[in-house]
Image 1 (cartoon, rainbow, N blue to C red):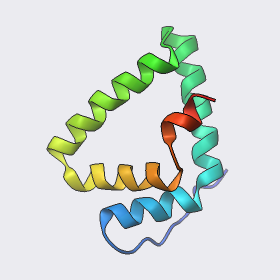
Image 2: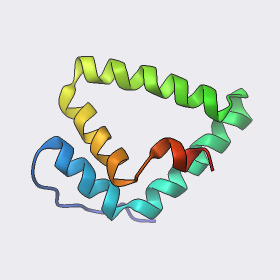
Image 3: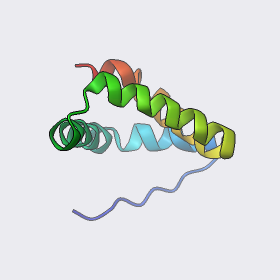
Image 4: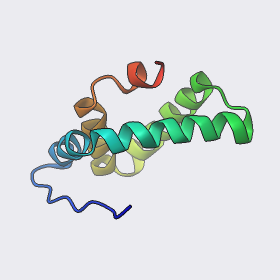
Length: 87
């Protein structure tokens, strides 16, 4: 499967929203793969993975606010990532 090429404009947050909107199906698929892999390879529940993800996001926000803004934009474009992941 070839990687998509996106042409994103605006602030890091706006670029994240475009990314989340344009690659919705791929993001959903990737999340499902990661949650399955976390559970299978390390016994990590979705709840624990989400808690660890929150800590990681806090570290990213401290070290690189633009990356954190882009990640927030992707999450916001997807709706509630937590709701999506807890299906």
